[in-house]
Image 1 (cartoon, rainbow, N blue to C red):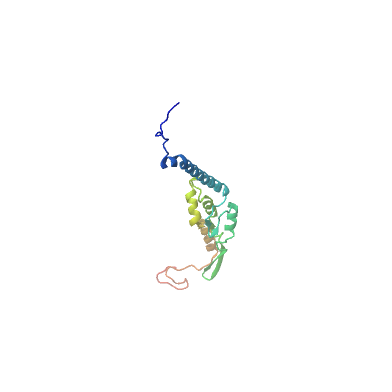
Image 2: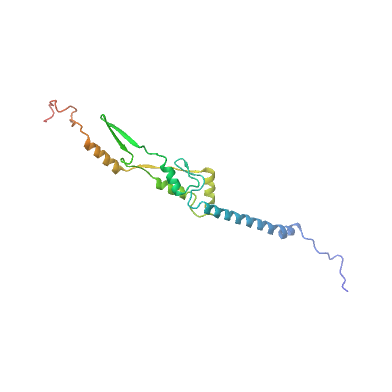
Length: 184
């Protein structure tokens, strides 16, 4: 028969020991689950908006959130930002031309590309801070208008050839007046 001493009691675990044995593993599992959910949400969000503009993006005043490329192009085309005609008064003669004739052009391709690329730089996880910024602050993409100088110059040259203006004298009078300084 073995004799045991009453003084040899099993040591009671300390508060620190109980924390590390019970709550730390539970806390780590909770943190791992939260990280896994955040990663899954980022990838699902990326998949949900694939081929569409992210929330918070606008182009030329149009809320482009969730629009596909074709839908955004259609809405921009409906804006009619360029004038339909430009009227020029030249010495009493009225000339008119369309924006296309004068080389006017809206850079729709660049605006649509910028809208689709907003918030998509480094991948689903790396872009999360930028996407939160888009959602919170928004991003306004301007639509720039350009003029093709070659087309504008061609229109001006064509109109100038059709004008019949009297030839101006270098001294400011017409040719009917005799000029002492002129030989013609």
